[in-house]
Image (cartoon, rainbow over all chains, first blue to last red; front, side, top):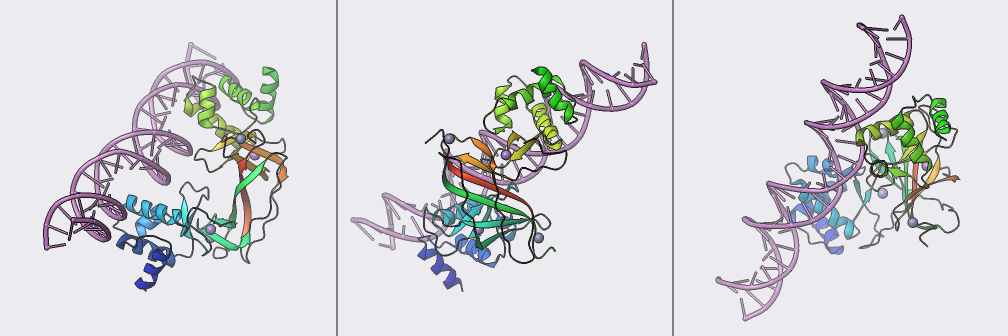
Length: 137
Length: 137
DNA sequence: CTGATTTTTGCAATGCTATTGCGCTGTTGT
DNA sequence: ACAACAGCGCAATAGCATTGCAAAAATCAG
Ligand SMILES: [Mn+2]
Ligand SMILES: [Mn+2]
Ligand SMILES: [Zn+2]
Ligand SMILES: [Zn+2]
């Protein structure tokens, strides 16, 4: 299975270092998006900055996308496989649960077309729905 | 006109202090949402914390709403007149210009209904569109 | 294999933003 | 005048993001 993880990194042109294998392994086990602090706690003891740079590298190479859910800490989650280096296609809704404070990707839920006033041009859209998740009902 | 500003505060049950009159006056002059730092610079020399508490009070009383546009600093803008203390109705789209970095309310552009998976319940929606604004075309 | 080069890593340090505590001040009501 | 209270200014703290730099590890060239 480490083999498997290594392949994923290599296919994305990411040098599969020990630390990166650990990070990707951890990400694969998550059911929701995680913050850098979550990652740091999950892989304790590891250097926060190194983990930060691993996530940045993954993001740059199209392996993860970052989510600003308004909690103050950026969250990270694996991309669907159609993302490429420098260009993400994560145009889906993100859900933040006000109870368990977990952030989830809803890849099946695409962001609807947003009409804008004349002269405005859309480049990206960030849609966060906050409420109660299915586990907290 | 100071009279006018004072009335607005009083109607929202906000004690019209000198500092709050200045803050509201400044807010009324803006064409886009502003950060605490913008306010601080605009009203220089004023104590940042006092301004912060003025904005928080305004928000609590339904006079302004805060916007998390992903820039790292919370932005504030006056509410449409239907907001009340403790309950905002600012379900409109916000636009962040990647060029001039200004954040605008688009009160005419309501957030569409977002469908969620079974078991998820919506409480609020934050929709930020990023792109080029009409002044920066 | 060995020295040079590039990549990763770990740690220190910095910059912002948000938020709270607390004492001083100025206002208000008795 | 005095007590009670609201508002203000300053200090301090906490958390997150980001960069610089030097040691360590992996890669490459001769
Ligand atoms: Mn996502
Ligand atoms: Mn708005
Ligand atoms: Zn939940
Ligand atoms: Zn603009």
